[in-house]
Amino acid sequence: MSKNDEKSPRAYVFCIANQKGGVGKTTTAINLAAALAILKKKVLLIDLDPQGNATMGSGIDKNNLSGNLYQVLIGDESISNVKIRSETGGYDVLPSNRELSGAEIDLIQMQEREQQLKQALAQVLDDYDFVLIDCPPTLSLLTLNGLASAHGVIIPMQCEYFALEGLSDLVNTVKRVYRNINPDLQLIGLLRVMFDGRVTLQQQVSNQIETHFGDKVFKTVVPRNVRLAEAPSHGMPGIVYDKNSRGAKAYMDFGKELIKRLKKDSRSDKA
Ligand code: ATP
Ligand code: MG
Image (cartoon, rainbow, N blue to C red):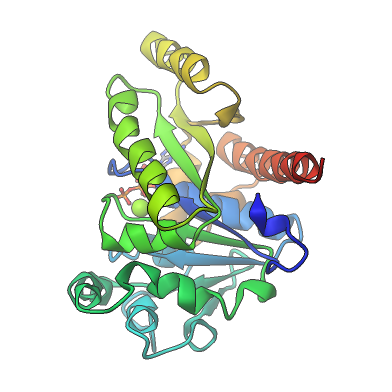
């Protein structure tokens, strides 16, 4: 991965993306951020979704922000001025709310409209080990700004019948961004989430995903776990809300697996 060049800034920038709605993107973004923070990494979580779920789930009131990602994208504010600490999660958040939906229209009129987030991020990349971008359930200009800024994409997916069908659109978009806008972009991996091993179909789809994507599939599987679903209403990551729950343990394992995978990749880069 080209970010490991000695001159490159420190942070790995990863999009958590899937254009399907409700597949566990935000839950993954919040809990991965919290897991990496527990592992002593400095993390910035960017809420690229006007729904503001990553903001709220990190314990920050989206309706009471002095600044948000919208102002950063249109160039009125810097990330340093707008970021807020998630006290429950132990990471920084670049928060969002409904105002961000207006950015789509404003960005269209700007030059280098898909590069606005990347340009703003350049100033803070040395402050963090990881920047995680929680993408909205669209392949919109907002998501394009995320993909243009990132070193890699992490795709959470449910093991359901239509899961693979939607995936090819996303993989093709990632390939197009890689070719035309961002030669650093890689598919980091697929994360199976909300998994229920008692359901035969889920096991079958899980096996299909492994056959199709091989070592691009993370070994960690996140189970369906009610504690993860309850946590956002308490304004905290599931990992913190109930650290002994199966969901929390899985996301902790995922954080460790991701770090291990990056170390392995950087060794093979140097080889
Ligand atoms: P959107 O596309 O709307 O942004 P999303 O992909 O970000 O959705 P989430 O908001 O993370 O998806 O999850 C959708 C719902 O499923 C939420 O209510 C969340 O609490 C719940 N959920 C996510 N992961 C799990 C899990 N492993 N076990 C149980 N519930 C989960
Ligand atoms: Mg979401």
